[in-house]
Image (cartoon, rainbow, N blue to C red; front, side):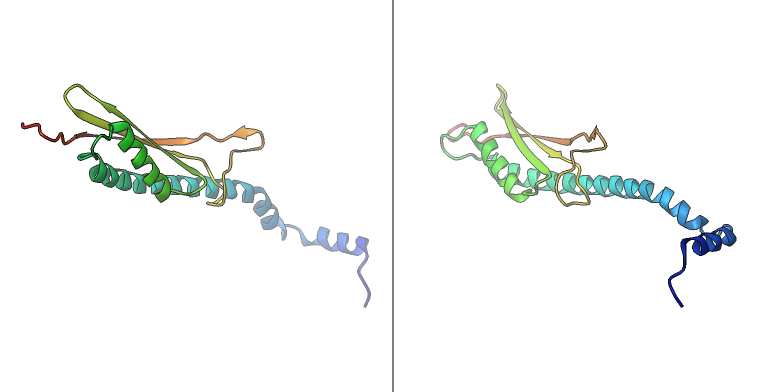
Length: 154
């Protein structure tokens, strides 16, 4: 029993009829399924990061913003919150930034932004494929607090 020749294998494949149809359909559908899985994974990962960011941002603002240290401005508190959040979200596909603005009535508004870059199933950044650039997604959250002012009575 030797190695079959190409002609004998070809004759066998021609006699099989439609027995290889499922393989051809799989080859045609697999790239589409892969793209759907990649998009679904990124959507779920983005929603997960947003939920975690909302919780952490609210906790950090509630911990640091209402009573800043002596001589500390709202911008100083924002940079401290940004540093704490960057430590919590230290993944390479997530960027965090926090800004602060104060109003004349003493309210400080902190805005946190989380920027998500699509990934290849959570492993590293995926900036584009086949010449198409993927957009970065952002999630914003604003919280206003009345900062404590020592020696001021309401």
